[in-house]
Amino acid sequence: MALFVRGTANKSQFMMNLCCNLSSNQCRLRKSSSVFDNLWFLTECRRIATTGVNTIIPTSKLISDKKCDVVEPSAGVFDRFMSARRRESKRTVIIQVQSPDSYNDLYSYCTEFGPVSNMYHYVVAKTAHFFLVEFKDVESHKAVLAAATLINHQEVIPTYSYMLWFRNAPKKSKKILENIPPVVRGNDDKSEEKIYPDLLAIKSISEQMELLYDSWKLDDISTRLRFVTALQMERNLTSLFPNIVILPFGSSVNSFGKRGCDLDLVMTLDGEKREKTTSRFVFQTKSS
Image (cartoon, rainbow, N blue to C red; front, side, top):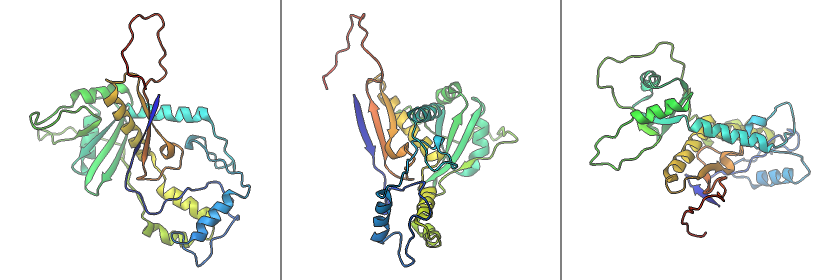
């Protein structure tokens, strides 16, 4: 049994399915036309898609090859992509800090629990700063969660999640490591106003679509956050459904995702578990 869930975010007024790997000489955008408000642009895109152009969209960025015009989808590669992202999410915590200046202190503190593989900084609502921290092994991840604590127990609902605060150290002396690797910056979003001049300077619709795709596609940190969200929901429901598996699907994993777009989730309640014919104990369940 599988359930499908959609988490809705604020949608942009400009939504479009982008076509990849189109030849640059298949069509030209009229000089007087606007990409955002001209119906001819959408009609031309539809014409390209229906005139026998053999364009195959890869199921994963891992199998894209710039030297080839046609990339064959591969279910095996897609499965490896999903498995790799799930393994990443199981080693990841999201930590809110007061400012980006906390990076060195946070990195040094995280290394006390185990080696750090990657750290990404991103901003929410222009003021809330977060670091996505991926450890190199699951044991380090478990050690961080085991060391985390709750404050104001009488005033809050205790929750156990992968989202943490990084509060100030109780002592003034802080142990800061040397030769700390640079942080990866996220949230390099480009608005329509910033992209519009670049679009006008490009004559080919194919190149315009590539520009839009490169500017708004889901980056690495956005994909990581979606898998962490899915894993957090899976963890919360595990007590009721011990075999549950929750995964992102749709635009979040098929290379067409846009930053800030919906997060679609598929929830499989029984996983791949099968009946134990030798057991005389049977769980009481409600028929679907």
